[in-house]
Image (cartoon, rainbow, N blue to C red; front, top):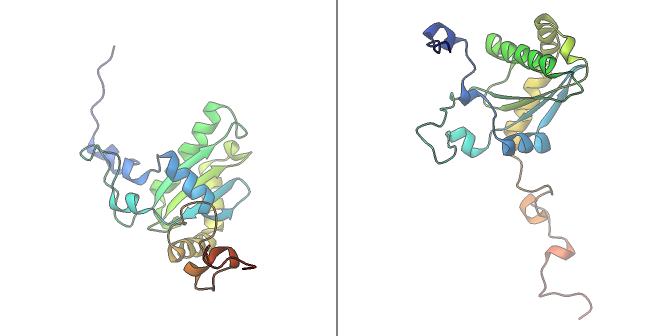
Length: 183
């Protein structure tokens, strides 16, 4: 068995650190349910404001091993189903997106969580194709990021907040049991 290669400082500068990755299923679900959508032919990009735990860097109870997020830096999560292709094709497509995320940070808005869902045909793209698709939606991506940050993190649960929280008068079912109809 060959000994493990030591990591050089040159490789760490172009790495994709844990603090810049979306890794938890709860984060993926939160972004997929409440994120702002931007679509291209081969990519569905979801943008959401980071939750408080991600913004503070709070992870599981393992604080010494928890990744330190880079302040203001976006986090990226990738999803590729079997529709994209086999494992080799899916992994290659995800590698290309990670490379675009690392080498061209100006394409991605700051202070947001981004989930990219690869669509059918994304496995046939090269880096230039991925960059062309991303560059074509940069203005829309920035606008969606502003909307996500202005709205704050999505409310817990799937429904809208109660009318009182929105500033509207409460509906009949939100008034409470002290004023039942017909009495």
